[in-house]
Length: 176
Image 1 (cartoon, rainbow, N blue to C red):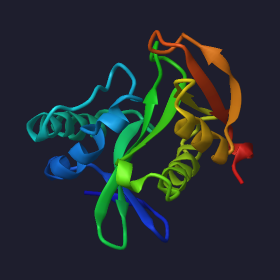
Image 2: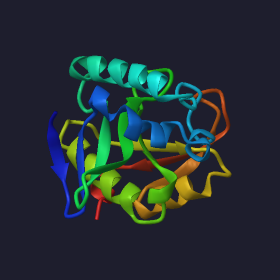
Image 3: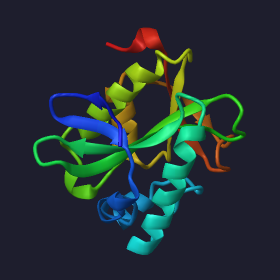
Image 4: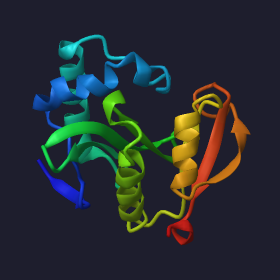
């Protein structure tokens, strides 16, 4: 399992199937699931989470960089606190979304900003010129995190996932 992004507090590493219980604390949480895109709905149990992770682990080596999904691990106790991803937005041909999901007991500690910043810095070494984040208008936490990341609000659209979403963008020169 590769650990390839590191800060003082966090590691961003590949998911492993054995991460299913920790991943379920994120993707099985109703508080998290209410904000997920239609492609990723609330995971109902550990067995389903294991299947999801099997698919992610199998797909990862075949994805075109910088796309992929990774675990966010707190270094002090080696606990998985969430996940980050870079994925093509629908219609899956151009725009790359950065997303972050944290288990609820990890909210408000700066982990989303810290892990997403590491991921953005790496992504911009992969010959891309912009990343997007999308959020439902009432997802105030995601909107606030996008702004803390230095992302610029570019408007609302229903282009992605058939839902009305706030769209934020960041380019390499926007990183602090």
